[in-house]
Length: 208
Image (cartoon, rainbow, N blue to C red):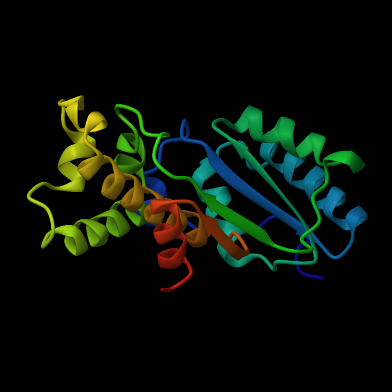
């Protein structure tokens, strides 16, 4: 059945080839049962160490997210290197580390206070999905503000961190773009919740 065979890699694209292997990357695995999920994790770990050792990790992750069946039992390993992903896959072979797909995933968006200088810069550089969604948010805000979200995030002036009129829209745009990124990876989001401007971001990610 789908999800139990040997990995067929890679499904590549210009976008995936442009992503650095040093960026945290979600690797999705699923199976029709817990035992099948553990077996798939073992086969994938073995493949990454052997026949697939020269395949870029972003291409592996993209293939698993977009071309494999999403079966009832699922696990995700996030790593910024091939070695860290293999370690995570080995851990998924242990019962207590296995995540069932029942219930899906809920995204929780916070209010003001989690901003920091330099946030989102790396995502803007490596993720077309994140960058495109942020540009859409920037366009939506353009009629209301005299500054650009993208310019604020990429600029050298950290004074915006103390301006509520800038911080809140920037956090909203960043959260909406993060939601788009997770959805693009095939994460099964079944609910969203937020506080303050996070509530607005949750409504946007939900389609409002």
